[in-house]
Each structure stands twice: as structure tokens, then as C-alpha cells.
Image 1: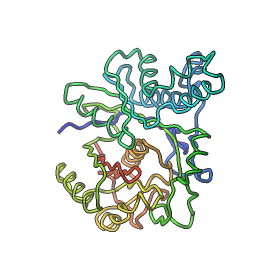
Image 2: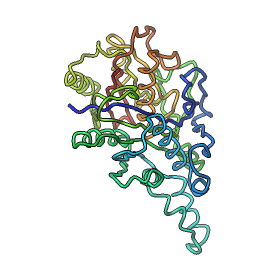
Image 3: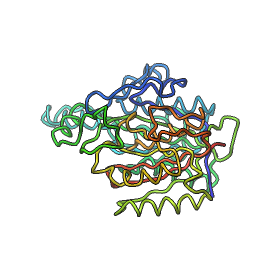
Image 4: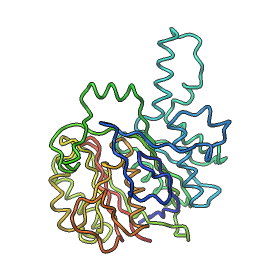
Length: 353
């Protein structure tokens, strides 16, 4: 069974994750019913002549990719694989508004060129002078999971080093429209996200990139043992049975999992199956969450994988993530159980290497 070693990470989120020393100590709350990503000074990561033409999603993706590459200390990768649900949404919106405002005349092509979903991957390839495999997945809640699955298959074909990442951005207009559709809510601080009884998420944005290696090196932080996706399970029992089979495939049981990161979004309509599974998870493992920190978006599972990698690296579970009262004595195995809109479910297994 093919495994992958995480040698470098880069994450831009609503928290101070750009700082390599940050470990969920100071957590920024949402701005009401949504989160904004904390963006760094991009001049540290991107040449000024390139920077002025880039939209926000491109800046975030290229910067996070560069951070991961610098941490892994690699000059070349064999493939670049990105995942996104909405793509470069700001540029798409800008171009469509220009069409309306200018009566379809005198349009500049820049926003149109940069509105395609594969722009982030192509920009990283241009900067790195990488002419190898370059692919972008737009699979809604499975977008990031698809990048990881593709990377594992490429390792089976002989590739050695691969850069993968998930990117998402939102715009003021997108927030306004979804707010009018009653898709958001302000979380009650006295009611934890995993106990929500009301509908509505806290929308967010962010990006996380990873340099994966087929073999372990001195830079390896954690190991990806496997991934599985599950589409529209009918009951929580369906999820439970798939989870047991997934763990058995890796010669593990739930009691072997030190921390289980669960993708509670705060919307009871989407979280109900995870809420039903929580008592069984807490009985055998230590349950934790992450969307109270990063918010909800198509590729939030990328932030979850970054979080899981940090837990293994630091060998500690911060209180900001904890659901269970107990704490793990060690963190050897981390299981990520993500869900998006109650439709897309996935399991990702990370281990100490």
C-alpha cells in the first residue's frame, strides 16, 4: 500500500498559521457569521512584478506553496496538484461585473485569464519552472481529497516528490448573497460547535499546501497512510461501517487512533450524523474539532491535514481543538473525519514517522 511522507507545509487561514511557531495559542474569532483569512506580506514570497497582477486566491496559493517548498528544502517537484471548490472567485466576479458595467465592451483580459480554477497551479509551475504533471481538481467537497488520492497514485507510478494543496476564497458579494439565503449563522460561544442545534455555517477561506515524498527523509514530519471518500451516506451506521473497514485495511482499530479530528461545521442539518457517531468515537479515541478554528469551505480538509500534521509534530492537543475531556498520552495516529454539507465525507489517516 502506497504511503506518502509530509516534508513541508504552508498554511494561510483565519488564524496566524503563517507563523511556524503558532500552535493554536491565540485563536481569532469569526467576524460574526464568517471568517477572513489573515494574509501575510506577499512580497516575502512573490516577486513584486508578478504580485501586482495576482488575485487573492492566487496570492494565497502561491505563498503557501512557496512556504511548503522552502520548509521541505526542494528545488523541483515531479507534479503539482491543486484542489478548489470555487477557484479564483474574485477574478471571476470581477470579470462578470466588468461585462455588465461596460456593456460588454472595452474589457481587459487579465481578470478572465486569471479566473480559471487552474491558475494557482500554473502560477506555481511558472515560478518553479516545473514542466511536469499539473492538474487541478474541482470536486466540491472532495476537491482536496482528490489531490491526495491522485498523488498517492502517482507515487505508485514512480514519482518521488509532489506538491499538493487546497485553495478557497470568498468575496463580499458572495457573503451577502449567501447571508440572504440564510446559509450562515453566528455561533453561540456558550454552545460548542459539535453541539449545535441550529442551521447555518460560518463561511471561511484559506489555503494549505504540502510537499509529499514517496520515501522518508530527514525533513519528514508525518506520514499519510491512506484516504477514503464516502458520498451521500444514508445513515451514521453507513459511515461507521466504512470507517471500521478503512481502519482494518491499515491493521488498526479505533482504539489505536490517538486523536480523531471531526469536521463539525456548526450546522445541525449537516452535522447530525457526526453527532450520532461522537459518543462511539469518544469511547475509543480522543475527539477534537477544527472548523471552529478555520470555518467551513470546500477545502477545509486541507486545513485539517495541516492541523493533524502539527499535532503529530508537537505531540500535543491544544484546548482550542479538544472535544473530549481526556487528553492523549501520545499522538502516533491521527484520523481526520471531514464532511461537507452532509454530502461529501472523507477519512484521512496520518501517522508519526
